Amino acid sequence: MAFQQYLGIVLRFWRGTLAVVVVCVAGAAVFSNLQSPVYSASASVFLTVKSEGGPGELSPGAFYTQSQLASYLDVATSTPVLESIIEELGMDATPEALATQLSVWSPEETSIIHISARSETASGAAVLANAATESVLTAVNELSPTGADGQRLAGANMIDSAVAPSSPSEPNLRVNVALGAALGILLGVGQIAVRSDLDTRVRDKKDIELLTGAPILGEVKWNHVEARQNAERQVSSGVNAEAFRRLRTNLSFVGSKNDGRAIVFTSAGPGEGKTEIVSALALVLAQAGESVLLIDADLRHSNVASRMGIDAGRGLADLLADAAVPQDVLHIDSSGFLSVLLAGTMPPNPSELLGSKSMSSFLSIAERQYDYVLIDSPPLLPVTDAVVLSAHTRSAVLVSQIGNVRGSQLREAVTILEASRADLLGVVINEVEPSGEKVNWHAATSISFAVRD
Image (cartoon, rainbow, N blue to C red; front, side, top):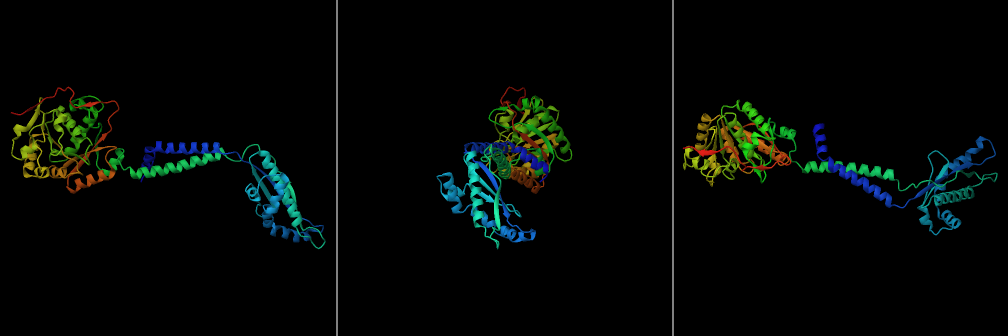
């Protein structure tokens, strides 16, 4: 996956990521404010080697000090030492509880012992650290063995006494907020990964180009909803007027590469706006002086009649079943350039009718009489009608609604068309309806249809 695609995924879900980071940071801040402050103070002890001789005589004491350093660290938190601290300070605590307030450690390769104490008050931390240090000094001096001359081999001296800190060591608001932000970023990236895996809907033009490998013929900002606008108004004014004219131009270029002018308009699934787009495109082509036959070949859920403002009646199904002749079912507009063939009586065997020799013969005749034959067919995935039709025309246009169709569905639709050996001329992208634009297919219009006599 290219960097641009990763960036696109991040930009798609950035609001959710930001929300997760804000919640984590706010949670860390609230947690810090709810915690009781804890103060820390430290003191340091240096273990010394006692000898009145030359440097060579320091060796036994130095060796003893290094070897016993770990033992002195344990002595600092031993029960006798802790009990002496409790008695000295008059504390109401057990040695076990006091041990949790003290930390004793020594840097490597040194003879220094650091003693740190924690308390709810700054002065309490300093007093406790100094008391613990005095106890360590006493313990070291008492436990250190004597040499041949009767002197202690090692001793201890305080080098840094504890002072009351000016601010609490816990909670550390900055550190907690930083950790909260880091956790929020990790969780945000995680939710991006999960959501991008679960949400496979096609989001933009690049997704469609990558999935189909076909050119984009047009981008229409128009979604079919309960209230619809008349097709003629859609293509003559508003945000879609130029989009449909561009679609008309692009279709003329790709259509010129094919022998026939019959084109199947379909989609991967239902609800992607193919009927609205093919109906409006038919009007645009007719306005440009092209003779157009619009065929409603969706014999299961026909919608062209309502889109074009024509009363439903006999149509394609009746024609293919020899129950009507073209003159009885063709609706011609007042300009004479646009003819509409409705779906007609809903048959029990749509696929068989559409794949019949009668359909093939009718399309062959229609291609000779019209500049364009636009066929509104059912979606590819639910039924095979569009595949059957594309076998007659060898040309198809796919309508894809951004945010509705999923990548797997779009890939499967393209695979189906390829298997039928249909030439996918391109894709028409149907984007979301512009905010505030009302669509009403039954609005007043100057176009009128009549059945040819």
